[in-house]
Amino acid sequence: MFLSFLACILVRPPDALAQQTVTLTEPSPVTIQELFKQADVVAVVRIRSGTTEQYPTTVYKAEIMQSFKGVRTGAKIFFGPYIHYRLGSEYLVFLQKSKRVLDPKEQNGTSDMNYGRIDSFYSVMYDGYSAMSVEDICIFDGKDEGCDDGVKVNTYQIILPKKLKTFPVDSDDVNRDDERWVRKSVLISFLRSLSKRESSPE
Image (cartoon, rainbow, N blue to C red):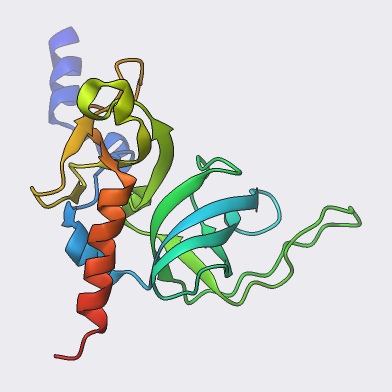
């Protein structure tokens, strides 16, 4: 009887299990040149505020500190939808303009503040990899005079030209091994060259 029961288990299709199958995938790697072409906005931004409650998606309000494509320096934009960006911090972002108009949720009489209707909302591309932290670090060239602003790039997802020298993350950093630092000034210079190339007539 036990063998018959076991045979039934082995022969019967696992329909219930098949319905619960979840596949996790990473976005395809992309060169930074192609990412620049695909983006509607490329800029260094400083996040001024954000909310995870007032809209159907997470929304950050950011100021454009340096612009390379799509917006002017000093402008304010709204972007999302990921929740791990730090208020007051700077990021190099590659964003696509969303077709969505965001209306705030009904507050049911509460006094929570929101940004009102957002007609122009931008999305971080490639599952969040196109928003890169900008920080002051001291790991460049392994010496104190190597301190500089750096941009942390996931170099598995965002492929950089070989001429852009990268540096390992700090040994105390617990993030993934495929994240590398690039000097901000060097990467900014490269982005400016892409901007000039894209705006030049053929």
